[in-house]
Image (tube, rainbow, N blue to C red; front, side, top):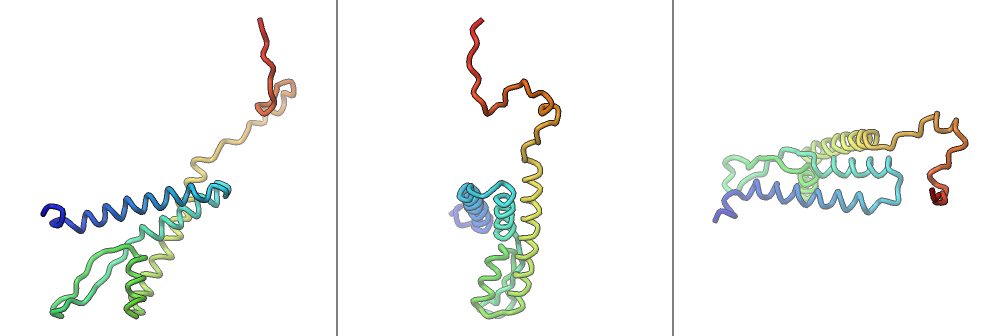
Length: 140
């Protein structure tokens, strides 16, 4: 019964792990793109799937609605299926904010992990063989 007693935290844990799998495989799946667009697209997707939103659903006994926090993409999808424009607008706004924050985070990751440019002093020495040319081994 322990498996069912704490179902909401387990649901969030499973959602988090599955979303990490989606992000990693998606990031690897778009390796044909340069690094900047790849990080920005991954950040946008992360912002969309990890942005939380609050919701309220009516119960059967009509006493108090059940409320909580869920991913904004899920809240927007349920609101669209139920035809609730107000909830849909709020969740959609949060999705846009999450996508913008994710894009900014992707840009920051790109800046943090980009390769340093080659120093100008290296260009001044033409006698050095570049790392792309093959060098013959020297004995002695």
